[in-house]
Length: 97
Image (cartoon, rainbow, N blue to C red; front, side):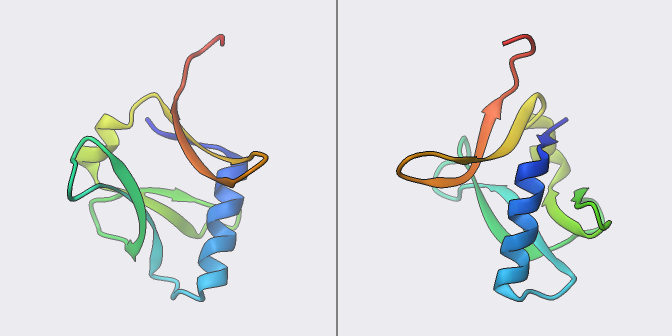
């Protein structure tokens, strides 16, 4: 299953708050239309069948379709700040590295 770090949950929560979105909206990980092997992020309504990730307050902040959730197994969504840029990063989890 996809793992979402505390830093990523905080960044997503801030982004949702900054956008002023309704409580029924969350960030969605989805496949790119032009290339189904790539994923992207968008804001969307939660669907009944979605896998849901919540923040510390219990608010749904991230959703993923079940078919995509299977492909994201062993992946980690993190928030990183680097010299030139900052943002959410999806990586493969390598235990012990």
